Amino acid sequence: MNFEIEGTLHKVFDLESKTASFQTREFVITTEGTYPQFVKFQAVQDRTGIVEGLKEGDKIKVFFDIRGREWQGKYFTNLNAWKIEKVNKAVSAPDDNQGFPPTNFEPFNEPANGNFNDYGDLPF
Image (cartoon, rainbow, N blue to C red):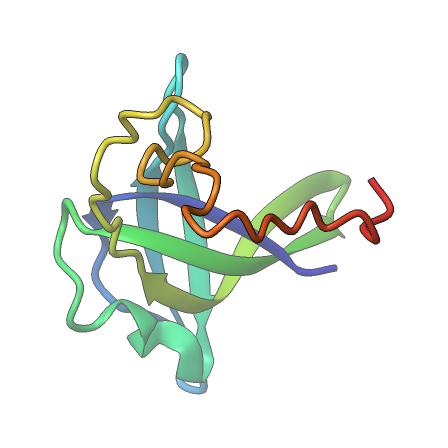
């Protein structure tokens, strides 16, 4: 299963070589909301470079899988990150109409020549 989450990059750890052919890199994001969470992810092998070019404080979206395994009667769960996108929150102009239609419509005036079309063929 694929998951995604947005947050702020909090910490990036150094690259770790577990064996001669296996390497990992961990990083932590902070979620937003009433109760912010610190969530640690792991990137493995060729994905360890996905945090390159990012700095702590950047807003990011992390795409990840959940991996679980058992080893000697103990159970481990990893959030395996495989893609990161930088999030640019666009600042939009405030909505002064507060959900109402725009107010730049012309008021209806009866034509001066008296040729009034009431559009009676409309279904409403």
